[in-house]
Image 1 (tube, rainbow, N blue to C red):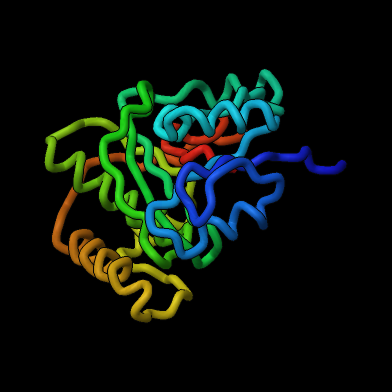
Image 2: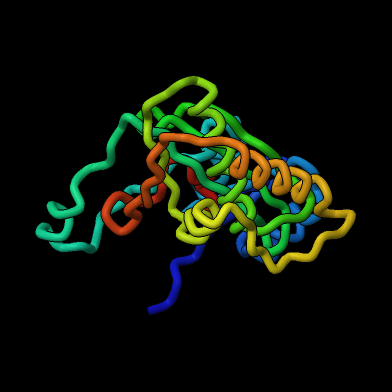
Amino acid sequence: MSKKKKYYTVWKGHKTGVFESWSDCKAQIKDFKGAQYKSFSTFEAAKKALKDNYKNYIGKSKTFKSELTEAQLKKIGQPNYNSISVDAASSGNPGKMEYRGVDTKTKKQLFIQGPFEEGTNNLGEFLALVHGLAFLKKNNSDRIIYTDSKTAMSWIRKKSCNTKLERNEKNKSVFELVDRAITWLKTNTYKTTIVKWETKAWGEIPADFGRK
């Protein structure tokens, strides 16, 4: 089955406009600080979005219909809305990376970091999760935290970051955050429950940047 064509709106980049391929879009956002972009299923939607504010589109999820059976969906149940959700996005791996946390029910943004010049999705997911844990502890909150990254959950349990990305000048700021995150995990206790977001049942996690 062939992939459906996508159109890419670039609000901020080397050039702005609507582009008909990911490679053309990527050329406009590569090495551009604070690039703003998103994919759309039709040219008309992408063109309309270009005339609007980027903030009105970030994180807006597409219509989702689960392919799981009713029995599977019943077993999984609904999300716990007494929670926050975290996610990361990177254009390239490694590439520009950012992460954020939102209220699961309202999708209100609670924190955001980046974009960083060089990072990976796994690093972003890890940093988002630690940031979320620290955020909930600081606010003495009993909410749980959702992530769609098994890798990040594993790194949290181990209190380590097993990235293959090598440190350099471009990613210095990211690794400074990683070092701080690991130190926080080793020197703090928390009661927050970390839960895997059930993407196949519920669609993209609410903190998703909506650029896929």
